[in-house]
Image 1 (cartoon, rainbow, N blue to C red):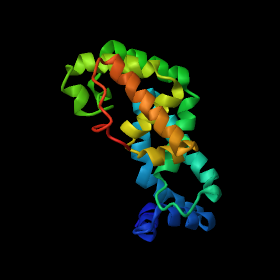
Image 2 (image 1 turned 180 degrees about the vertical axis):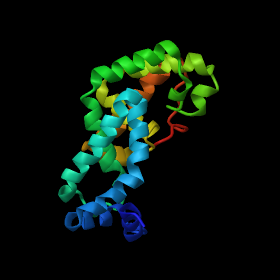
Image 3 (image 1 turned 90 degrees about the vertical axis):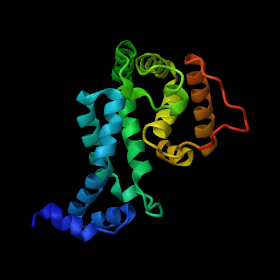
Length: 201
């Protein structure tokens, strides 16, 4: 049995918080956190920056997490928001690369960008046109609003978890999300929901 398999056996059934706590005394056990979360952090970074930068951002996310494992709030069993928060800070250092990536998507209209607001977009625009317009609209968002929107839409975090990830008040996250969605709808000429049917995260 390999070392990684042995670690996986030891950490099976343990929460992320428990794994991190054990990794304070047994650093090799931190590998279980990498195994659990690397794929989604890599995928998120790839969507934000392109495949070329995704490897570096994902790897650095876990290096930073390992270095800061003693600061993790172990009252939170799931480390997903924490890891996305680290990744978001690293991605912010690549603001120009992200802008270039989004502008390239605006030219090519790659369909994978479409899932900012689910069927609301897909039902009104063909995939290529939606991809181009959505990428351009994302590129035009202020960085803080884009960060909140994409952590909710692409990473699947709740608004509360997004606030935790970015170390901002929940009300600030909600306000940024509301503004970002409004700007995206305006850019895509989509109707804005009424207060009765707006989805709250």
